[in-house]
Amino acid sequence: LIVNETEEVKQTEPRHLNAVLGTFDQLWSPRIVTQVNDYDVRVAKVSGEYVWHSHEDTDEFFMVLNGELTIGLRDDAGERIVVLSEGDVFTVPKGMQHRPMSVGGASILMFERSGTMTTGDYAGDIPSHIDATMGHKIS
Ligand code: NI
Image (cartoon, rainbow, N blue to C red; front, top):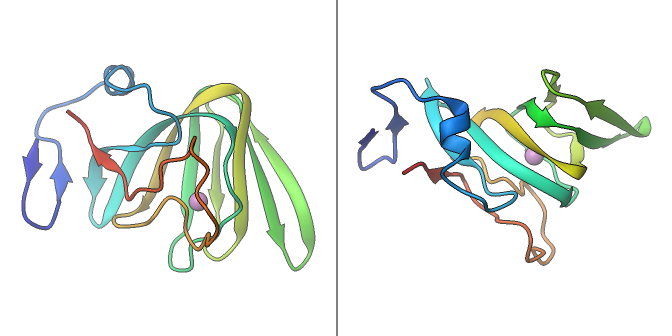
């Protein structure tokens, strides 16, 4: 693991995603597995409802590693949901309001630009079950 003053987090050795997922239990608290150019590859464990938010400057890529993730989407055309099962991928376009949720719990992988706050433009109080973060380094 290389960490420099710009908080770059590139792996020099292979890591198994399941091993990374085994290093933490906190929900809605992404770990940065590695980086690709200026994008983080993050994994997170999720359960329950997130908050509605959008990311002004970046798309957000989701892949479900296990469990099921539902993402609410809201734009000028209205509101809809997408349901993602294990192996499904989906990209939320930049600027689109979205709210991930999982009734039974899920582990997910995300690509998002380094420095992106998980809660995006959300301006309300952060519920206690959510970690507002730019991602944590893995141990
Ligand atoms: Ni988001």
